[in-house]
Length: 111
Image (tube, rainbow, N blue to C red; front, side, top):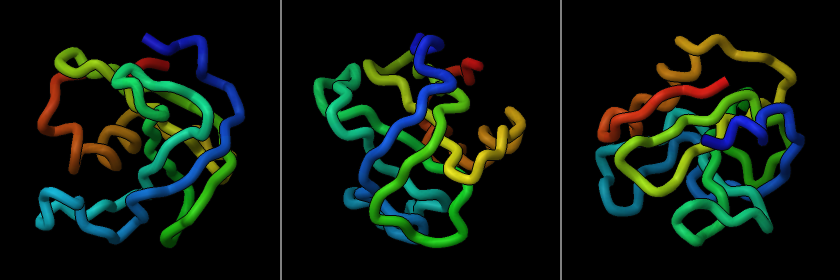
């Protein structure tokens, strides 16, 4: 479930910045920066997806610490939760931040 990655410092790029619309679902607007870790392959064969917390505006790239993993039971890829401001967000804060997209899946937050 990816628990071994928690605490790791990762870097990557943002392809769906805070405030942008989902490419296939324009009514879904990203309240957090969403991107990927360069060079790390996720369960879907693409680079590992991440939710990036701690930015007040859109980013192009990030460096931060993985503080949790959202394990999707009905998908082939977990989503890493990355803090770029050093905060260790509470579970409820994380779940609220990612609800806009994760509401369509069944999963659990792993710490």
